[in-house]
Image (cartoon, rainbow, N blue to C red; front, side, top):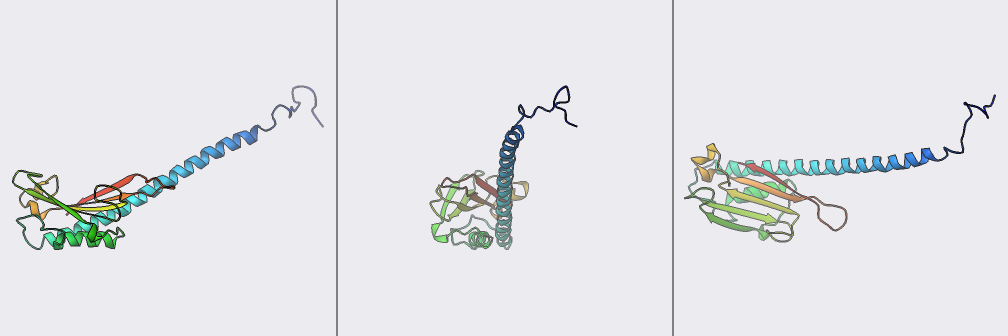
Length: 181
C-alpha cells in the first residue's frame, strides 16, 4: 500500500539533504568541544606537574633552611639552599642551567630592615623573557606569614614558570606554580 495522495503522502523532494547539513554542522561543534577539552586537559596536566615540582623544590630548600637558624639571606647562586631548589626542580623535569642564573637583592623588601635575595634560572633566553621554563627562589618570601615573621631568613618561596607549548611558532600561556618552604 502506497500513499501518494492525501495527508499521509510522503513528500521526499522538499526534505532531501537536511540530515546531511545538520550532521555536518553538529560534527563541527562536536570536534570544537573535543579540541577545547583536550587543550584544557593538557593545561591542567602541565599545571599539576609544575605544582608538584615546585612543592618538591620548596621542600628541599626548606629542609636545608631548617638545619640552622639563618640571620641573613642566601649568599648567592652557589648557596646550598639555592642549589637544592635548582636540583630538585631539575630532577622533576624542569631543566635549567646554573650558568644562566641571575640573582638580585632588594633592601627593605618585604619589610624594612630585611634584605631579600632572589635567584632565577632559565632554560633558554634571559631571566626577563624569551624562556620556556624559569625557576625562581626567593628568601625571605615577598609576603611574610605569621610563622616567618620571627625568622624571615628561614622561609623561602619557589616559583616555577612554564610556557605551555602551542601548535605553530607562537608560545602558549604561561603557567606559574608557587610554594613556600
